Amino acid sequence: MKKILGTIARRLLAIVLALVMVVLTVVVVVGTPLANNYRNMVSMFLSQTTFTAEGGANPQYFTSDYASAEEVDRAATELSVQIEREGIVLMKNEGNVLPLANGAKVSLLSQNSVDLVYGGAGAGSIDTSQVDNLKNALEKNGFKVNPTLWDFYETGAGAAYRKQVPNIMGQGAFAANEVPMDIYTEDVISSMDEYNDAGIVVIGRSGSESVDLPADYLTLTEEEKALIEFACGKFDTVVLMLNVTNAMDLSVLDIYNIDACIWVGATGQEGAVAIGEVLNGTVSPSGNTVDTWSYKPAEAPAAVNLGDYTITNSEVVSGNKYIVYEEGIYVGYRYYETRYEDVVLGNEKAENFKYDEQVQFPFGYGLSYTTFDWTDYTVTESADSFTISVKVTNTGDYAGKETVQIYLQKPYTDYDKANQLEKASVELVGYEKTEVLESGAFEIVTIEVMLESNEAHFTSVTPCVTASIEEAAAQPFVSSHKTPKLTFSNSGIEFLVSSMKFTNASGNIEASLSQIVIVLAPASIAVLIVEIKTSFSALVASSATNSTSLQSETAFSINVLISSIILGAFLWQIYSIPTGETGSATESLGLEADLIALYVASTLSGVVPT
Image 1 (tube, rainbow, N blue to C red):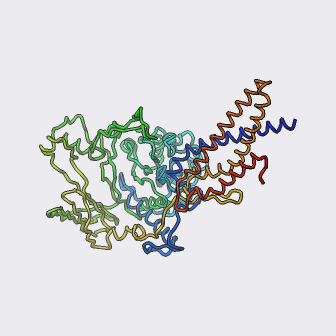
Image 2 (image 1 turned 45 degrees about the vertical axis):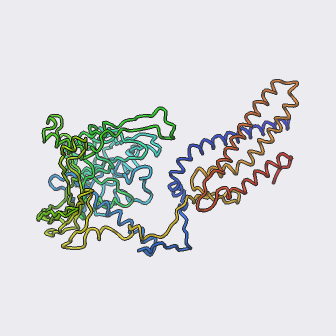
Image 3 (image 1 turned 180 degrees about the horizontal axis):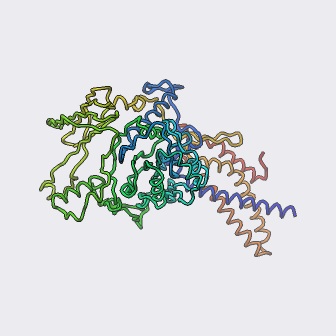
């Protein structure tokens, strides 16, 4: 009886180990490309070092401007906030409702208010463990935020609704998932009566690598429209805050009585506080749109050409998809402005393209809390460039910055037509932002445009009040020539198993899983070899008398053989790990190889190792 139970136990163990090996094989095969692409992100997630330093305890390639890592962090934080300050775009401000009064009591509407878009998915993701949420960011700037409404979205009934984005492999769907109006309770709605200086409706949209955005994701959902309509009926001042990473259809601005609209983009790890600074007027918005915001984005050539096209006989891994960029150079403003010029010049019927029905906010658009006058405009031509100079004066009541944009129009000649050369009707060739100008102050902005390349580079900005924007914004730590010498390798993930320390030379989950497998492999091989010996003995003993037993043992031996092949594949996988900065992976696995040899030899001889 004990012998039978022992045989069953051995076979069950062999089967279990074989299944484990199969599962781990699948995991390694699937995980290898992911681990290779995201090895540093995986290491950081597991709180492991992602680099090794060469040159002693304190290597110096260039001398840093900072005395400590803490100083670098502070500078990075300030730069992140400054980028957000400079980039926020004021798109609408009816009746100058912005900035809001100091200490205003506001209600943040939408589940997006508690779930800000800090960055994109994949390589654009942000560590959100230490970021400021929108409530904290506004309270730091003197606002009083409706706590009942906030709790409703964060932990109450509204917490069941969150936007969705696909994962880094493109699996999943984009969904806004706004809270339906019938979920709001009377207590939540009545809480807005006290915090009614402004209703701030937050729209959130993110993006990801590996997947294209569907057209309907760039329009507002019915739930979002209902929330905006409710806000317009509830509050005297309604601000639409666009926490989005792409241009959207904002037809709602023409439909509902929305007083103001700001585009804040993705805030980054530290930038949320700048939203409060813009809303209370500490900072006057000076950003400009970097895309054309269209009423009908799906009608642009690039959108029409977008699709899911497959190469049926492709042998390239993840290389069976393609797109034909038939739109050529006519992307964004180059399309809209050129199409409009064709209408003006009579090259196309006016009814075929109506600019005002296509373009809601043009490229380079952006409002301010103050006003500026441009005077003393001059253009000087040299042998290889144009130099443009303009005097920018702040004529309003708020301090602010202004962006000077230079556009070039090139004639579409007979030669261009004969040779089928494509030219946009207008092209951005230079831009520069002023420093902060107090009311009444001015600055002379000078931009040079090279003739041959039509590329702008800025040789001088003559300040008349304080230092130039370059000196104010370009913090020393961003210089790539003043950083410690760090040799980046793929090492960093380590495992401690049975008092043996395995250093992962390739620094990714693939190798780490393989190392765990290698620890399991000796016992698995030992059990399998014992089972093969037992099965072979059973075959010899029963071949003449029991054909059923013969068939059973033959099938089981085949299974054991397959399991052994799987283990062999894992061993090959381990010895195929690339060499990293910390040394050869093969060398680091030498001890494990010796263990395998010990188990195999001792099992064949009938001795159990200890």
